[in-house]
Length: 420
Image: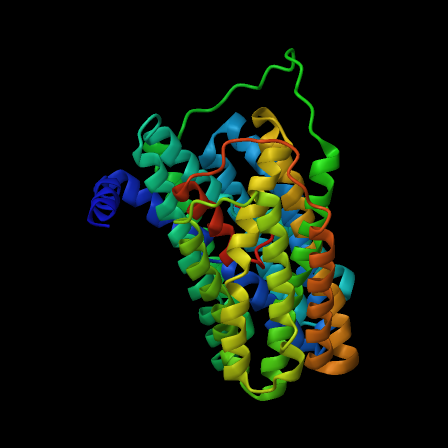
């Protein structure tokens, strides 16, 4: 334990690295604030959770489409110009979205602004990890640096929902999103300004060499299961806000969601210390079934504290399931195609997020938060059924404990528009 702490101290002793890591933390904090902030703004302004879900889904889908395009552009042009342009698009679009909702503009106008918000979502997480990779290339400290960023991701998705909910319910929802916009823009500008730690531009990859194939029969079930998993994540955010509204504890909606993230944080840390003997596919099936079962009591509970407690337990099934899904994907594809394959699973997750937010928003309008929770349970059942089709088709080196901990970072932000 002491040796591990010394390694962290060594990594963080680099002033330049501390600078870009802190800037990246600030730049991506709004990722944890925007989704629930939009749900609060739209639901409180229009009285419709269905509309709130559709707007949130639009942001999610636009972010899923734009993320790989921004990544490719960063490779060609460098981080600084892309971070600045994306942050400008995001900030302006967020401001337009707030005005459109509060002024009662038509739904197409609101959705157009939502597309801009999604298109401009920050690539700060990827940019910071690329800087660590460049700075510590070939060093064993690189795994520790990635673990630092995973911990910061967990912190972001615990603090963000609480902060935006507090501002939205005690001051004004528009102000809450305004703070998110200012914070995100400031973080992106500071990160972009640190040119000395930016990795060099990469030339276009050669297309002469033939690419190894992806085993679609192994990858497709994982993508389908990712859609169902995304539906659980996307639906839960809308349902929790509706539940908190009905229970008269709306200012604590972020804290209730934080409980889910906290459970995932704990299990992610524990998962990273275990040398698993069971196959990734088996772990994925068990994790999916456990997550589905953990959702079943929610429609029967009406006490906010008890819901939060159940979400802590439910959250503990998230990180192991996500980590196993990455390991299964690694087994399904050659290493040279891993990024592409993970892109497909991220797309499935983002699609599920959008479907869950929009679909469960409509259910809530029809039957309240209790019906919304039943919708989450249904998405969990679909996840468990889809997971039955997941099989490990090949053998690859499994991620080590630190790599697993880094992969677990995704678990704490189920409502983010796309993977980092």
